[in-house]
Length: 240
Image (tube, rainbow, N blue to C red):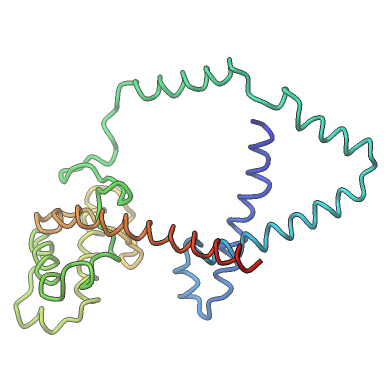
């Protein structure tokens, strides 16, 4: 258990930071770099392959400097039971988790007059990237949903004003409204940056219904990532 933790800290955590920095370095402008939040798919595998090769080369170089006695001692420590969790330790950890699960729940800090603000990953909020014509069954329906959401938030425009705005401006109005909602609920600073909001908690029936559609879209995105990763891995394997 101890060595597994050490391997994770010594290899994967530094790699994740390395991959992110490398992905940002490939972007031309500061704005593009800021958009890079994580590395995934084919790019992640390319970076990991390169990083693992370099890491193994460093290990070989380090091992070449060890004498045979030191190498045997390290191998012995890796196989030692002292570095593995005992049954007693495992049972204690499981019991601790069970106690936490069964403990009485406190009222979440995120509880507001609009309900609990659940993270988008579990379906409680709509991600801004999915508020789009392609995901909302076309331009007309997307405008209908967004306008209904703004209306519930007491933000209304005449037909002429609405038609004069481009789609990004309309979405920005929603971000501003969400910023105000968070400030009023004391969940954000007065200087909250609306541009950085990536998700909103739906207030209208129309956008709440879209939550179910979003779950399917998000699931398909994840599935496509896995297919792309698997395809890339097979391609590399066959090429060798």
